[in-house]
Image 1 (tube, rainbow, N blue to C red):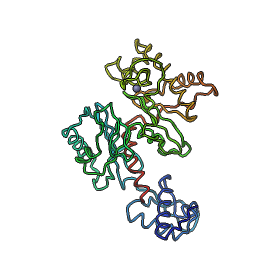
Image 2 (cartoon, helix red, strand yellow):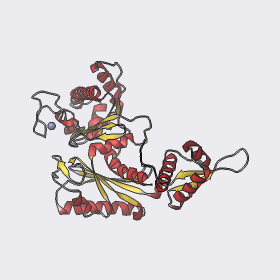
Image 3 (tube, rainbow, N blue to C red):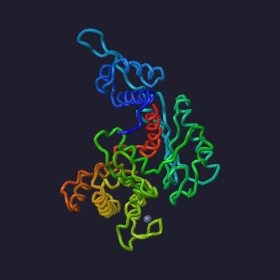
Image 4 (cartoon, helix red, strand yellow):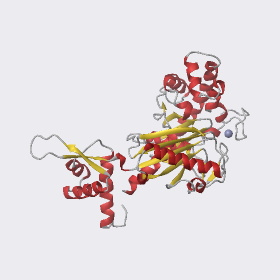
Length: 375
Ligand SMILES: [Zn+2]
């Protein structure tokens, strides 16, 4: 227990926060139910509810059916009390989402927008954000901020980029974006953001490894619902694990990296860069897609098995390519089980739940999390 005795202000904030969170995870509930569940007095709950209502954070949604006496009011969180914007910045595109406080996507756009470390680029990104807000017709004063996910390794304080090869932004600062964006900005690593999205709203899963199969391979390690960043913010850089001694040359310069065998490009290079077209042709049994896939899944399963051995938790296939793997999951699970020393069950391997803009959504969810913490 903490030795510090909480003062009345702190107790008040804790109660208010607990009440809000209780409501957040439920469709609707009554004051009586909250009081009972949180072991708080009715006047305390009533007072806090009043305050949260005045701030527009919760709303009355009607009356509960009652078998007699006064009917209880039903209360719920007002999910449109705030919004967050998420950007997924890649080498060739910018994806933008606007989500509400419940994490629901209100609007999303994906533009072909090659990254350039120039003023023109950052100015244009600022304009993309403004246009997106304008088209969505939401009240801009309700926007909490903009989470910007980059294919880059960030500094400890997440203000600058320590390492980037997919985009030319090594040494880059958040200020380059923030200069042209009128809302508070935060930076995230792309795979960490996508992994964060996967765990959102999950009550029973606390540890996962997320393997991000985009045009470059990345990943994130989530332990106890927290991203494990490692000593140098390079935790989860699965793309550069060596799976083949003296193997294919990776874009990083080393040989035999996972990236050179499992990136989405390995598949989409046969279909002019279109991953959906690759999976369409594969489904119809075309060549060379079938042969490419057979070889690809061999390396993929090898990587997955290594992750299972390292972390002993669920492994999630994500990224552009992972999002298409649902229909092949039985095969992949079967192959993973065959490789496993300890188990004959491959169901620890799953496909990501969020197929659409998981990275941008995750970057935005960080702002929602901060907001909820602050209530
Ligand atoms: Zn590499």
